[in-house]
Image 1 (cartoon, rainbow, N blue to C red):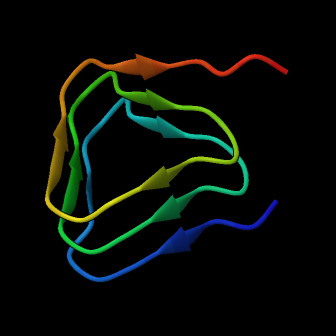
Image 2 (cartoon, rainbow, N blue to C red; image 1 turned 30 degrees about the horizontal axis):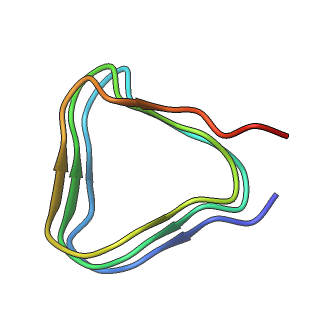
Length: 56
């Protein structure tokens, strides 16, 4: 399990980030946000109560 968090990343309470995620600069995860494994979230992204699911 290896996650990469760049600068100015805000992870609010109850937010969850799965394995092998890459979170680039200036990303905010709102409360209740769930990010599954092997995701790349680009800069200047605002996610509030969003769930991303990918098939195996």
